[in-house]
Image 1: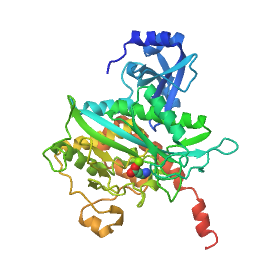
Image 2: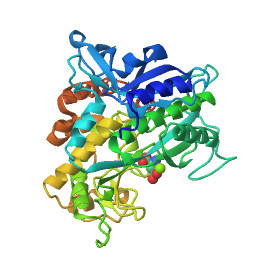
Image 3: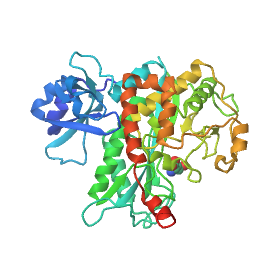
Image 4: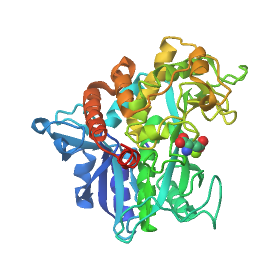
Length: 438
Ligand code: GLU
Ligand code: MG
């Protein structure tokens, strides 16, 4: 933190020949937004004087209270490697402020910062695994769900037709200061994964937004369409965004206890219990789309139940056996707003710590193969089966609601509208199944 001063940025703009600065922020529903200012406006932009009309941003404010300003986080300064290198384009990720200087309560970055403060001196460390599909475009440039690639998990070229895009994304991200730990072909044809190195949650959320932009932009350059939609094709695996979490203090991993058989400290176990306890409550945030719930079905390594395990990929939380103690939450998908997702996860974990919750025993069997009676006997609850169920669970979860703060109502309202729009559709599946049979 505190890498760049205002003067450093002005010098960088000059030395690098930057002509445009993109002032970026994220709306409540996870869409990246930006306004470009020319380099001549740099001082004004750095002083937080670039305004936006909040009433035009999904989930922000009403028309009568629309003026807001963008205050850049200087440490997020980066040059966009995919834009022209003569007359460069830089970006700054911004916080949204009210004109009177108070942080805007509906800005996802501010929401995350508020919850991070509740962790006190402990740093919430997050490493995300971004899964996505690369599809072909049709003759009009419109995205399809077709892929020429026939590769599977960890395959390489010539089967893998996405290695060029993954390479460009990894190089671009490293250029922008986002550390990429690994990238590989995922299980489904046309499906890929990019793993970001863990960082403090705010940086990690910024990096996810940058990573998604890089994937989409560089795929488009190769004539492909990248999508983070959780389940674009029925019958094959969907795309998740596994979130690896830990708490650290003074560089020490507080989740680690060498003496414990599973390597997990008491704090980690309580945090885990909190995650399990609120898993349904925060689901509408970590899995925000109607389509998210088509991914959370048995048989595709995506979780359907609030259970944990050391190795079991059908569990909601996995405790990977190597590389430092951490909890891998497997439910989130890459359509989520990462700022809000990390805010609700941290609030859930801290609630477990505060209430000194004990996690139930680990489940080693394949949860997808267990009967409802077996699951009930072990006290394992199912995750919400639809956005509708998830929204009701969120409405009943005071911890998740408090993490979202004053914008919770707006979030629920927007998502309820999305559910209603879906619920009143008649799908092709229904026509195929019923039109002639009845
Ligand atoms: N694609 C799977 C999911 O939907 C995860 C596969 C994996 O274990 O990486 O979560
Ligand atoms: Mg994966």
